[in-house]
Amino acid sequence: MPPIFQSRAIKAAALVGSGLASFSHTRRAAEATILTFHGLCENTGDPGILDWSLHLPMEMFRRICALLADGYRVIPLVDLIEAQNKRQSLPPNAVVITFDDGYKSNFKLAHPILKKFDLPATIFVTTGFIDGEELLWFQRVDLALGRARKETIEWKINGRKLRLLLGTRALRQQSLMQLMPEMKQLPDADLLGEVGRLEQALGVDTPLPPDLPAPMRPLTWEMIREMKAGGLVEIGGHTHTHPILSQCDPTAMRAEIFTCRDRIRAETGAQPVSFAYPNGREEDYTHGTMLLLREAGFQCACSMVNGRVGEEAPLLQLPRYGSPESVWEAEATASGAFETLKEWRQSCLKAMSLI
Image (cartoon, rainbow, N blue to C red; front, top):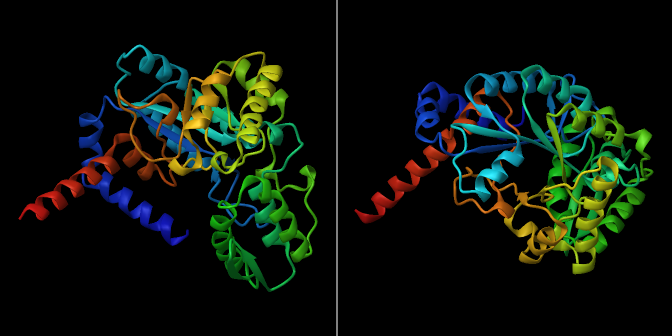
């Protein structure tokens, strides 16, 4: 387990063990929590993938769902939208489950677990990925670094020179973490070209969809329709090719949003009402993005800014938490213990500044 995940697990265990999670569960019951997952995997992972943070082991997901089913009220995202629009209160300790991108494991592994516990969820799909037209660009970067036979490469990007070490799997993972933030700063018009140059420099071919390791493979529209027909899963938008929208020009941004909407509507027969911003930081979308979402008929949009959903949460900037890595972390997140701890720290710092 990487050090960052170890730190999260230890902190979460402390919050649960100390009773702060139980305290927050009662104190913050009026707030909702939106959890973000991506894909699942059957065990500890495929050696062909460097970044396993997007693919939670299915047994851990099952345990998290058991926790939520027992101690929380898992509601559809559309119920949260309706409550916010009507200024109504949510059920106590409400939780919304979401998935980003549209991995086949959402159908093969996650959907049976959701059905077992009768938990609704929203899957935000990248429609070009589902169509089989586009690999997710970050998958190509992951596979390029993982499959390269070189032990090192000097790479210039954004005016910086990076030395990417590839001699071991651990070094390849470190190089991926070093390169990805730089890739995300590129204008969308330059991004795929940069990925292609990287593949060429590393001597690897651009993978075709059948070449993807199993956890990276996309849903099909048939799977999506089957899940939607079952009543537990709603489908939301996540752009057509997964760019960072603030890095797109206005024409490309419009195309990403409207093509995504149109493909979902054509394949499911329903207008999608929810959206999730790729990458999801505050700087990853703009006021213009939100205007386009409104024009396209989306009623809410989820970010990846951590936070609780209260009565005043703006529907086009809903906060979400990333995928819990343990049951303790799920409990500390859903109960509001992390937010309570943050507030206490801020109060202490404010009090100390007045002394």
